[in-house]
Image (spheres, one colour):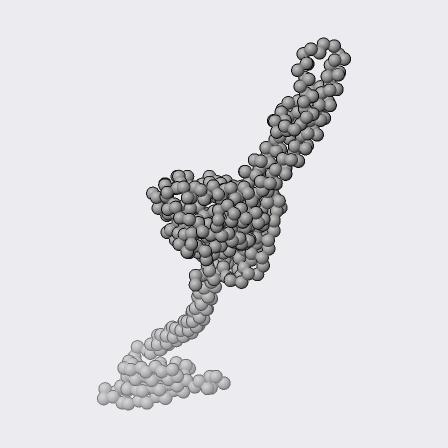
Length: 357
Length: 172
């Protein structure tokens, strides 16, 4: 046994696994002495823009100070990442342009890649604590479903709050893999809803200095049933108004029309929210998976194997909708298993740290 | 197998602050040790010098003692030499006086001069000449004086005169 490994076993080792989403971060701290786990703590922090706040950084730093052998591992949240079924850079050109990517080969069969600039950006985000390991979600997925890789062609899906990683394995070989962000799709919808609200300033009538009444024409397009707005047709007579009384009358009628339009807008927003509910996160994920499978089936380079089973590693406690969607629409057997992603990151960090000794 | 896109940072048991502290402590301890060693070496050298000087002092003391002994011996020798010289001077004087005592008419053939004794052999024309001219002064010098005469064919006398000094009597 090497001296450094002996010293490491004498000291307490701290493994910190971090999984970052856009608005939250999950941290798992595992304190080990040799092979024995002495303490394990999990904590979730609310953050913004996938950047750790001071409380989260403080929490990590406190446990890092416990031992000189502390390792910080994070799950790669880069958008431009994936996995391809070859370790040959020459063959890899058929699947993706890896010119600006860092690649890692697994058992000389398949490799994961990630954009270099995004990895640098991730390291910059973790400057206060520093990073020791950045793991690909595809490694986590393949090790989590290690017993399902051999045999039938299976689709493995890792679901996070804001990301979705999927890979198709057949007889131990990776056939297809892709990584998506579900946050943009959802947030775009949310954002557009917010924008609708804020766009009310786009068409405003500054009748008086202190009043800022507005009508959003974009929203009006969506509100076909707004009868109240029919009154605004009378505005065409605006040019004919010459005296003050006519203007005051016009102002009153306009105010009434605006009030009525605001009420209509509220009703429309409520209706829109319910529409978003209908197109839930699960459906978005289903759409992404469906699109990925279509890509897999349509492209000749993937040998047109039929996916028979789907294994979902669920890290965000999603509902049963996704399972139902897939079973009904794709005619495949779906198995869902919950995954503590931050704990899996710690597990992989422990495994990786052993190799680094 | 490698799972991570980046390599882990180097883990060390000691922090950079501790390393800096350790470095300065090492320098301080090194300087203290160097000073201690320097002083120790100097002390040992000084002790060596002291021992050497002590031995040298002892040797000098011994040589002084031997020189004192030599000086004392030389003084004794000097005194002895002076005594010999004095005795010789006295003897010379005595011999000179003795020859002065002997008259022209008496011829000495042999004279034996001892510490307390003087024996003279010689020829005298007559006993009277001897008695008057030589015997009388000898008697005044020596305590006892005995003379024997032997007649010679030519009528002269050869004589043997034994004269003694009595030391004890002189001392008394």
